[in-house]
Length: 158
Image (cartoon, rainbow, N blue to C red; front, top):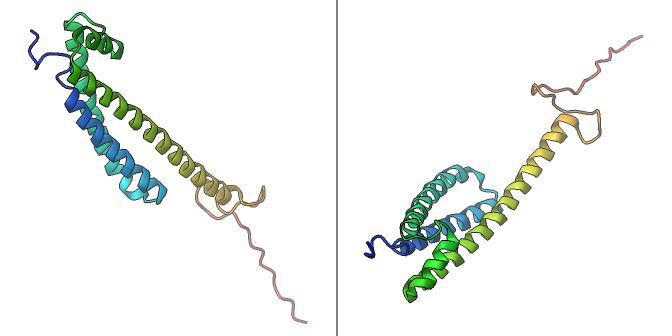
């Protein structure tokens, strides 16, 4: 049962490759957010969801292999398995995967901040339209209709 196809390390290269793809997508997302090219984000989000699903599947396989080998089905179990088996290539692949995961988390954190800035700016614009620059001077109401009242004065000719 210790064939290379069933060890906890057997999917590490595939996981690293998938993590690289995700990092590339996160970098692309970041560039789009910085340039305010919002139109392409839904398609990119769909791609990210697919690769994250693939990463989860690969991690699940690794966790199952760890459990079958008698180790905790999580990252600490992988570290213990690596110590016990002392496979240099597997240790190197694991370190690479952990470094990629760290980079991905940081990119995701930054992208989240950029998204929040866009949301805040949009909310400010909506507030200006609904409330106006000064309290009580709304341009548009919740129904989208103008709330600016114009006064019509008749001319008195005399």
